[in-house]
Amino acid sequence: MGLNEITITKAIVDQWQRKFIDNLELDVAIVGGGPAGLLAGYYIAKAGKKVALFERKLSVGGGMWGGGMMFNEIVIQKNVIPILEELGIPAVEYEDSHYTVDSIACITTLASKACLSGLTIWNCMSVEDVMMRESSVNGLVIIWSAIEMSGLHVDPLTIGSKFIIDATGHDVEVIKVIERKVPAKLLTPTGKILGEKSMWAEKAEELTVENSKEVFPCVYVAGMAANATFGGPRMGPIFGGMLLSGKKVAEDILKRL
Image 1 (cartoon, rainbow, N blue to C red):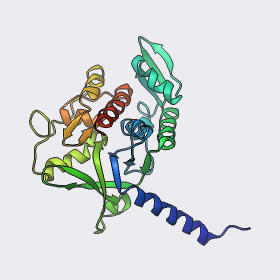
Image 2: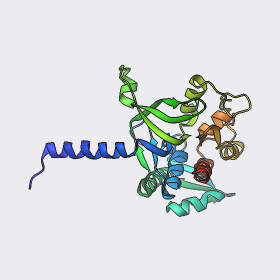
Image 3: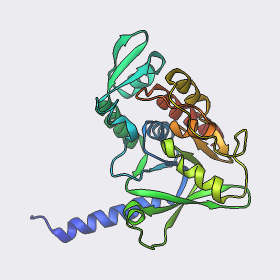
């Protein structure tokens, strides 16, 4: 039997719609498909919870694809090796507890493992707002990235979620919306976003993990968004803290679920 173009279209639209409706109510919604967001999704999905990730771009991976200045190698620390071994990602020991990893192999494997564990990824979707209640946030307001980029006046749709993870990197986009529009203070020393500081790799790697925590009721930050929220420095093309951050946030939320 030959292929039919209408059947192809019908299959895509029908199955996409089924998947979308099945994800309207989530245990955890993750915004940002970098390494921290993907690994958090991997562990939460692996635990049997309903979790979806929303990524503005066509592809996931965040800043990991390009390694350091388009040299597609990244660096991780020795204490992250168990995570890579669990995922089946090879690492090469360099010196003084520094390990190198092929950035393409790392992000493609991480994304694949997360999807196969049950994480649903929605690419080309932007989060433009949150659903607010009296003292909490209980969902996301989403729009196609192409609509956002074109500036068309098109109303968005909504996704309900018990917990939200902002893993949007340096831009810390979800927390900026909450700070600006929700009438309550963040769980930072000033009640506001403290802002990212200049590079200090060792300190940033420590603080990325330390700062990966709840910043508003049922809203967590992970990865570089954690340092941008709580005032930590950036770290450059070393990604151990990002992976540890995603795992920590997942574990914290799973305890509450």
